[in-house]
Length: 329
Image 1 (cartoon, rainbow, N blue to C red):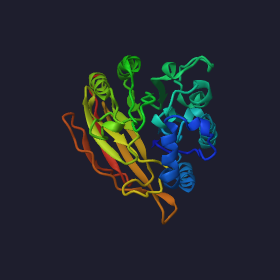
Image 2 (cartoon, one colour):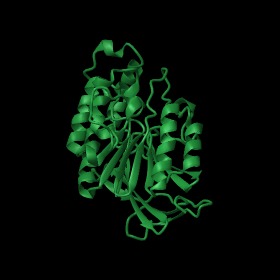
Image 3 (cartoon, rainbow, N blue to C red):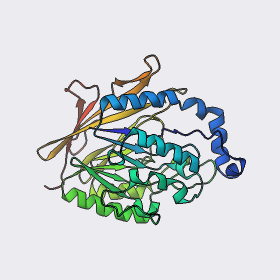
């Protein structure tokens, strides 16, 4: 079982220096002052951590936006929080657009999270490593291949777009092929939603069409993303079958806007012959209880590859999918 969190916005930029705001960060800071500091709650984050400790997933994936403005001090704050949450081998992190408001020095920012981002087979950590050499990442846990790509790129004011880029797409193509040949359950982690209907043009994945082509060509069992700050469910037809594309809301939101209350998902993957079975449980913050609770989630309907969505019969509140993979047939 593994957990999927996103868009935690953990840091506190209240002490930011004026000179650090003489760029696009000013817009983000004003947004934080106006509403984000009220929406993203430390109490909710503490409840999230308590719930994760109780549930005790074997692995945790976090699909970006752990900071507000991408300041070096924020990366330090988040690094300390990650170390308290668990060891790097049990947590996989990819960046989001809030980590790259502007171009920054790698060693001052994302390098602090390197132990949580690098592949299992990465060479010894060094100052020469950059985002271009880290992603796509590959971490294999109990037959599940977690592949992380970075869509985090600086963009113009009032835009929150992202892109994967040709180099990552080429490397991802190879990773999907190799992990598919070894019959691993392939999970793609990305911040921006790959399905164009999830968000509007201002927050889109610019090269989403190219990414979808790679996924259709090589196959993938599951795609997880963030960025939307609300639950998102879709499907993508690939060579491996009809694959779920699932986004989670912010993990720290108090829920000032309808449908935007904090939540995260738990995933259980089992092998049944040549097929995969995926059960998804959504857990949402309850202000009344001050804790996260399990809730019903919508069924995922089937597709051409007999990908059937039914209520879980195991007692969990969630969805159960049977993914008939063609890889290895």
